[in-house]
Length: 209
Image 1 (spheres, rainbow, N blue to C red):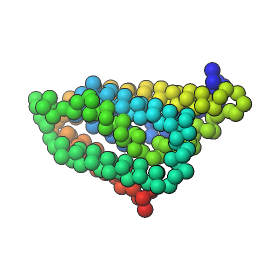
Image 2 (cartoon, one colour; image 1 turned 120 degrees about the horizontal axis):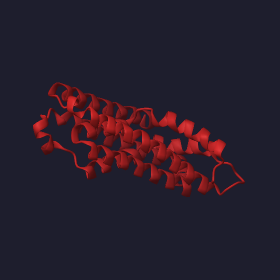
Image 3 (cartoon, one colour; image 1 turned 90 degrees about the horizontal axis):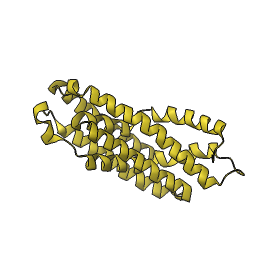
Image 4 (cartoon, rainbow, N blue to C red; image 1 turned 90 degrees about the vertical axis):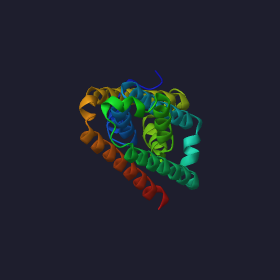
């Protein structure tokens, strides 16, 4: 094993705390599962993990460190991420109320859900900095190669995240029939849009102010 068991356990404990904290990924998973069903929800989960896999690769080859050391690159990613979150939030506002008997016509496809989750994750500079702030603390120099340890820790984070977010999608599917009532659906749609736009504003304020 590239990482010692004790160090891995400490990393997994930190990963669990980070993973269960709600963020844009969580809102997308809930929105797409509630609006379009389990298959789309799980596609959203897969998109998030694909983003994390690319972040892991960037950390392994040193690209994340280069981005973090280049202020304009972080600002560019933050600007794109904020714009993308705001656009997704506006889409949620516009979704409106769709009766259950017509839900098929308004469903988001799995491919779109995957893409939205992937770009939301990739365009979040906090994830870049998370990989740089968290993972090096659990890397032991002089044992296995550092890139191998980073890759192993990245895969461990993806595993923890997959379990949590898949469970979230399945839970949302379980209550989807109740949430499909017009009054509840309107509230969910507006709340999701508001939260995504809030994340966009916070991201812009933190990195672009």
